[in-house]
Structures are given as structure tokens and as C-alpha cells.
Amino acid sequence: MSCGKLLTLKEILNWTRVRHGGADRRLRLDEGRPASSERRTGPRDRRKGLRYLALGVLCVGVAAPASAQIYSWRDANDNLVVSNRPQGGGPMSYVVPRVESVIATSPAAAERGRPYDDLIAEHARRHGVRTDLVRAVVQVESGFNPNARSPKGAMGLMQLMPSTMQQFAVRNPYNPVENIRAGVAYLRQLLDRYQDNETLALAAYNAGPGAVDRHGQNVPPYRETQNYVSRINRMTAPPIRVNRIYKTTQVVDGRSVPLYSDHKPATGGTVVVSH
Image 1 (cartoon, rainbow, N blue to C red):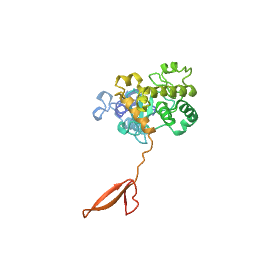
Image 2 (tube, one colour):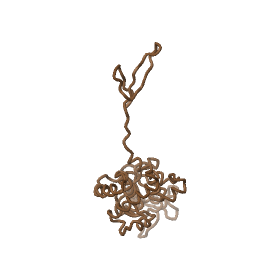
Image 3 (cartoon, helix red, strand yellow):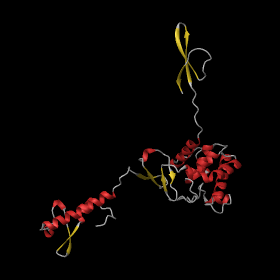
Image 4 (spheres, rainbow, N blue to C red):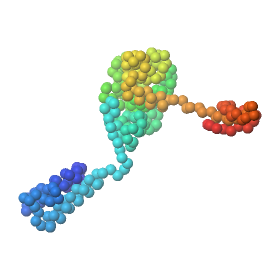
């Protein structure tokens, strides 16, 4: 018996074969005993059958994963998602390099994007687009895989559609120079269309400007597009500055009144109540 094929316990029980009298016979263990026409009469055959059964169970044990549970499901675009967290673990997802139609909930390593840093910075500066915004788009669109191709036909680092390629005279969408040049130019065009509203520009980049306009120039109610915009906005959001809050006490009409301020008073005792 080979361990190359994973058998269920039922298959092992119902299809274990033993040789008896020069002929192969099927050992049926329905209701705990062989059929009367195929009953085994000797202890040798019984031991032999049990050895096969033990070997089959061992195969199942060897095939079972020894590491943490891996979950998988299909997203809104019918892409296979693999993760060490269940489906409710979060909306973040990234294309798996060199694998089509598969995404994961762990981002591509930062090192994958470094070869394109200068190229991204050059075209972002040329078109007046934030460098971190362009980088986030590339990250979410392709995971910095220049050979990425979506089921809908989007290609390359910034997942250019054929119409965008034609508009910006892209001859080879898998060439990072051409792809980023056209992708940033298209993103700039969308920013101009929506008065530098990055949220609407990103929604249009994902779903198309027609979808944004049909919904009153709002993010379309598509789960994929809403997750796309949310993910990029989180990746490019500036750090939140949190000031210290100071508490002082002032006596008013004979009773103490607490006062709070984000500026430290020049005089008097204070207590920091929040950062």
C-alpha cells in the first residue's frame, strides 16, 4: 500500500485487500465482520488484514498536517485566499508572487518593493502624486510582482487594463518602467477628475470611473472596492499625533473644579491624564 494517496478511514475499512488462496479478495468489515461468502477462517489472514489496516491508518497520520491550521476560502473575485486565520481575521489581502488567482493575508516582504523605489519616486514626483500612495497601490495590486495577471486581464505591477495600456501607449505591461509610468499617469488623471480626492481616485482605479460616477461620485457599494480603498488608506495614513492632556484644579465658589488642557500650564501643579 502506498502513502501517496490519502484515504479516508471508510475507504481503508471497506477496500482493504488481502490475498488468500492465490486470489485477491475484498475484506468487508460491515457490522464488524466479513460477509459470510468471504469469511476468513484462519488467524493468519486476520492478522494480515489488520496489518494492512494499521498501515493505512499510518498513512493517514503521516499525511495529516503537524503545523498550525491553514484556512482557505474564495473572495469576491473568486480568488483563492489562504491564511493562518479564519475568514473573519481581517480584510487585508495580498497577491501571492508567481501564483495566479491566489492571495494571502500576509503582505509581501518589504524587500520585494525596493528594486522599484527609485522608479516609483521618479514618476510620483513627475506627476505630483504622493510616493507612498503609489507604492501602496503597487503593493495591493500586485504585491510587487511584475508578472502578475488578474482573471479580468489586468497586468503587471499596477495591474493595467488593456484600455489603459492603449491610452498611455504601453507596449509591454510586464516591463516595470512602462507599467509604473502608465499606472502613475492614470492615477494622476483620476486625481484631477475628482479634485485630488484620493479616496474617489482609488475607487475609480479599482472599479472604474464610470462606477464612481453612477453612484453619485461616491465609493461604489462593492465589497472588493471598499476593501481596496480602505486598505490603501490605512497603509498611507499619516501617523496620528496624540498630545498630552494636563489636568489642573481651580477653586470656584469654594469648591475644586478640574480643568483640562493640551498645553501645560505655566504655573501650578498638573497631572498628565492621557497621552
